Image (cartoon, rainbow, N blue to C red; front, side, top):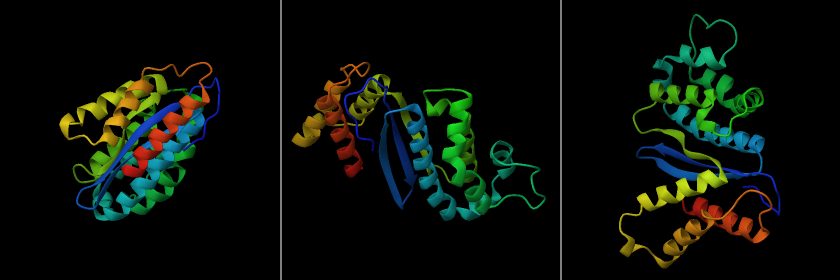
Length: 206
């Protein structure tokens, strides 16, 4: 996760979820100081997670309609013998950060969920993996819009406030405070440090 100092550059964040039912699941917060580094890190995180699922569900992937994935990520004609899970790794996942950065350069967008490469990847997952398995973006965007949405999600998943530990209650309180602060212009170093610490603890726990 990026280290921040007093800066007038905008920062971007994303909440990424991964699920392989009965095997593993986790959530990851990504925080970066520029749109380019943000998009690259999100694409790299998704590619890393999806590679595990593609290998685990190789038989399902081989039976999926991979010509649809080839239409977006492939080059040349779709081969007569089709694509396999190995082709997905070779032509899609290995180059995902580069593909994401190229789209960002061509059509600047502050939300990865609105980028066409992510839409194509989501369609592939729906087609190739069992229900509930996959890696996806729950929330993303500039900090000033991300943090209030993240707070709302965290509160929605807090089913019984009376059962919160002191540490968890303090964490939600800090998130609530940070979500009300300004993240444009010059941001105090202490504010960046508090946010970075909150995100790091979240990733360690999840």
